[in-house]
Image (tube, rainbow, N blue to C red; front, top):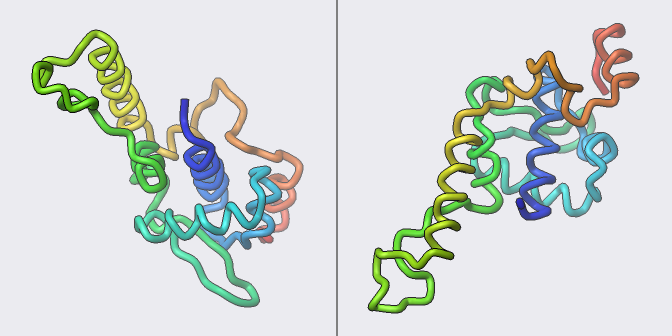
Length: 153
């Protein structure tokens, strides 16, 4: 349903939400989210450009969320890399359709509206607080080590 880029952005943001106080280096983030490092670098640039993450270059550098996880919705993440948009008029430019969408485009618009509503009402914090599911992209062994040591690498 989502582009690969949007999926990668959601994975990266989910991992960063799990490690909010630390800068996570791109190679580690790529490993934990199973995203190719070069591709992830481009995705991270888009997320930074949208003001969702901040980064620091060099030794000890990496990325972290720009705001707390409860203030970042999933639609903001997706829209930073691949916009989800409603269909307001015939995508084919048929003047006889105008804003009166054909059944195919009306259903497509309804689907887009539902996606926008669901993702707009879900934050990164919601993902990590969900008690009925596993943590998103969570390598529990690594996360446990980070928590016990008080250090995240």
